[in-house]
Length: 149
Image (tube, rainbow, N blue to C red; front, side, top):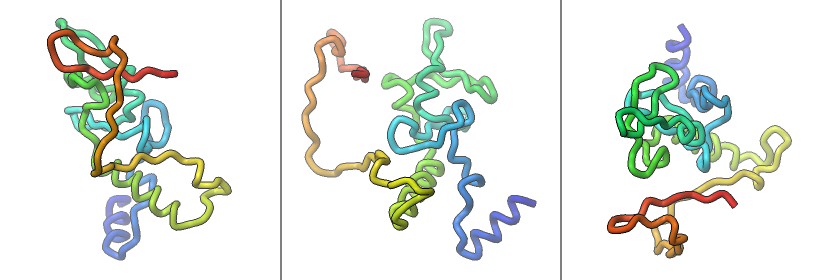
């Protein structure tokens, strides 16, 4: 019955509610965002925030895997780690739509929007960032490591 209500709302041009779009990680219960908590999808189709997925990797038969907390299906950890997993495009666009709608109103829940961090894609020339020597693999391409300062 809830699905039918959502379809009627979409037909009438009413955007789906935040709850119906599942824009929160079910591991940490934090809202997805466009920075550290990007919605990343495992091979099984379940979505979790990037920050939680970074902590779930495990070694099985000498290969790194991320076991899904919902169904336990293993996803091979990409070379770039959890940050290289596919984005859940629907959740990502939902987060972006929320940010865009918040931008159109001066305040959201008494909180100024200027304090929120948003990353935007850049199609221009990218800056060259020198990496510490410890991040380079010998004889191959570099694996980038993110250091917390």
